[in-house]
Length: 597
Image (cartoon, rainbow, N blue to C red):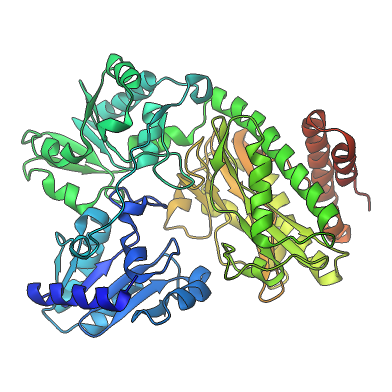
């Protein structure tokens, strides 16, 4: 790809339209974490392949804003591109807008393609640039005029997610949404986020890497449900099934036309953080917009009984794959060549042998030694290193199964660990234990729980710079809202924890250049005791995988924490041993033996 040439083409288009700056985000029309290749405009234009970043082009400057996860990668991929790396101080923040405000003269014009920028983002950009009377034009797709050979949108068939896994029919889910619409007194509800659509209709797809989703919109009214999708993606049999359930198909490209026909005075509920500006522009001015969260977001966060039963079984499948992997690793290290990439492929292979496996839930983070200290490190051919029989190895990985989604991190010692490694590991593990073992009153919010995972580290003057927990979907996105466990009381962590939510617990400890440590499990929020002081909740740990006993400094554990470890390992052995035999079973037995002071 010739970025210098493409920059020149884009600047000529900008000059013809009198634009002073053009913004190319990483997003698609549905604001997902991952996007189909058709919408990878920022990657195509810059050569930078990281999942997060924003490209800004002016008449004499081109910059790529990204966070610390990608600094090394971006420096390599942007070399000789004519595009400068701008390092974000705070991840996931629109610092490029602050830069534009500072650099552009009063009365300038900034352009972007509103089809790939959310309503909320556009409003933020406009508000921030308003003091200098900088105009923001949101209907300019300049990239398509240059990227003439862009990939086609996927046409793979959508699959029906059997109710034996989903636990609730699409008809019942639609009924629940309509009941909430009645409470909110809205006539229509537009859903643009792909995970919400997949959950609502009990459908899954393969349009997006790691997430079993399909490109679409859904519009629900009190007497109709319309799925906007490429008709080639729906088999005749599935189409008949959907229509029998009151779901009409319409072409994906017709969404704007249908929205433009909503009658004046009717109320339309949309999630402005998930709906793009181009769609908003198609809604007639006489329609009353009700801004809020998608109704489906809260509904799908509460896993039903069938989903929970399936997920517990899936954790056994996933645990077997993990035991096979770590048994292999322990026996192969130092005897055969193992790299970060080959280790990631090995765990994928073991998962692929399990029932209901459909793929990975994200790119495996296989970080050896100092690479483990790079949060969300993704090994590549350029960064791949051999694993040696020394130091620590961090593996953060997960699978997509018809029967659930997994996400687990284990850190293991590849030789006898030193005291610093054991101390660091145990301090982070105490956070995993203390949060997993928490009991808290109904109504507790994610940010209130976050400190429980950090206290042991804080007492030693240590902290980690990312959140402690994220929601997880059911054969859906591995990162799912609305709940979150992190210190920020102004974001998703303000949402309360509720019975049926599945959330990760992943406190961590990092020493740059040395090692990274996380022990991550998924937990289910369940009912606790009901006393004269109120109703309480607690967590059930779902993930089944031994924790490296060699890395635990038991002198740093309390009696309750040690009991938690031993009880957890007893559960892991009881649940996984029936699937194993021979050397693998003996390995599991040794790895789950009780610890004693």
